Amino acid sequence: MLTPVQLEDLQRRFGERLSLSAAAREAHGRDESFYPPAPPDAVLMAESEADVCAAVAWCHEARLPLIPFGAGTSLEGHVLAVQGGLCLDLTRMNSILRIDAGDLTATVQPGVTREQLNTALRDQGLFFPIDPGANATLGGMAATRASGTNAVRYGTLRENVLMLRAVLPPGRVIQGGSRAKKSSAGYDLARLLVGSEGTLGVITELTLKLHPLPEQVAAASVQFASIDAAVNCCIAIIQSGVPIARCELLDAHTVRAVNAADGLGLVEAPLLLLEFHGSPGSVREQVDTVQVLAAEQGGHRFDWAESPEARSRLWRARHRAYWSAKQMKPGCRALTTDVCVPISRLAECVGESLAEAEAAGIDHFLVGHVGDGNFHLGYLVGSDAELATAERLSAQLVQRALRLEGTCTGEHGIGLHKQAYLLLEAGEDSVAAMRAIKAALDPRGVMNPGKVFSAPSLRPFGPSPPPEGARPPWGGPAAGPTP
Image (cartoon, rainbow, N blue to C red; front, side):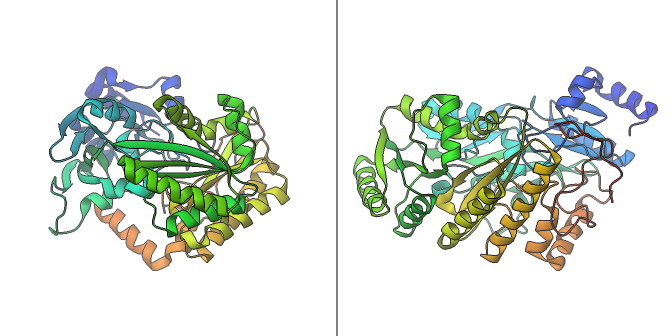
């Protein structure tokens, strides 16, 4: 909790950029996770790297938490101020600093969104492919190592960040990587910061890889009689070597939700959304191969979205599937988890997980970037009993993914919810090494505390408890002291 003297000092240093209003604190104390809000004590709107340095130095000196904040679209509680402190909003740092078409790179501040960057690239014949769905900030996407629908062809943020600048306690600026395509110079600090979830430092600048706009784009949807058939078709596509750009799975519940929200008129059955990039000849070859593979799995109604407008409508509906699914149960929150498994084990993991959800009788939906073995299961919860069921199913899903040599999260990150799962996946010695890195770079533990592995007393499975006094979104008693 900030003292009156500390608040006065912050106001003197940052003036009107510092907000103490209840509305600002509430807006910066929630994300898209199922956790109840946990607002910070104050919100600082950073406008420059100098502001970030000053904020990090101040929090380090005062030994108070600092929580970096972008678009607030996290699904694992990353931006919740579980120990109070100062929220550092980076959305005003939204300048595109440099576009170098010759080197296929762009340098941006952390508050630039992916849609903003791609709009600026249109007349260059280039695009930035990482597409997690929400119009997230690129700094937040880097902090959580985002990926999304194009990852099967273009990779994740980890593969698409060449260089970054970041502010570490007690306010020093470091640079990781370079504009060159490869380097063997020392430790890879850029990759260390990408995916660190704000627990090591604050990213203030990114140099990203760009890609030429494909000569031709083709998109289609194909329906299947069962989820197993759809997943097996995806596996066949990947194993055949087709360089598909997007391969997304929607179960029947999700199709029903996007139909209701976007009026798509799709048959409510398991669905693959596909996209192909390349020259006209290569796209035709990819399409022919995939049509044969889909037919072998009983795929039918191979519907084409031929115009850019039709493609945009199809993918916009896919990107909004999370919010569309929530609308099917008004007033609910979604416990949405993700795992990633080797492609050969995908059908087993998806099938068993959906069977468990159906048997439990809980409202749920599935979407997946199944081309790289990653899928999301969302459980719609509106009561404590439903939350307990969702937690049990989520734990079983993670255990299954690890048994199949996968990971507890393909792209959401650890945040609050998956700390115990990280320990199970990586092991005590590996987590101890991560803690040692954290202690070396953030010796006073002020950077986004309580996230990733900062709660060693967590139950073997399940989320970290909500902050004391917090109420679930559907009402009920306030949370008591954490165990």
